[in-house]
Image (cartoon, rainbow, N blue to C red):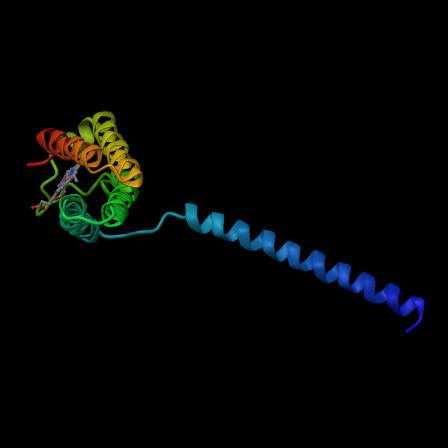
Length: 163
Ligand code: HEC
């Protein structure tokens, strides 16, 4: 192989690398666009999805309690609390305008007092994070206290925003 060939190959390799980089950028861009894309979903499906998530929430709460009450480490508790943190973060987005339909137990206050509803979701998120953090330390009593605090945030939201 002479120098020229090496040079050409080198250039070709550079070109290929640049192409890959461009594609990677394009893909990253596509991902961003996909993430930000607005998709359509029927109000009935949204209501079903959020109600099912709430029923699954009670299962997660069972895992949290089970982990605290039974011996052993608190991994089960921590994992279930993490699910609730994630859910709490996205919770308000599952109550878009137009989903105040029959079959939903959401009160009109979810939409008329949006700020309060979002604050209630944020308090819930932080409380679930508190359970996660306490479980991480392995302190059963502290985890139980954090759990009771979190349960209070469920109740507080239901009092104002659920039938
Ligand atoms: C930020 C407010 C908020 C928080 C926090 C919250 N919920 Fe709810 N919850 C609602 C609303 C609003 C509904 C009604 C949803 C619907 O029917 O469209 C609901 C519905 C439910 C349902 C379904 C009831 C049914 O018959 O449809 C269960 C179960 C439930 N929540 C349990 C919980 C538990 C357990 C927690 C805490 C671990 C919790 N929720 C935290 C607002 C909240």
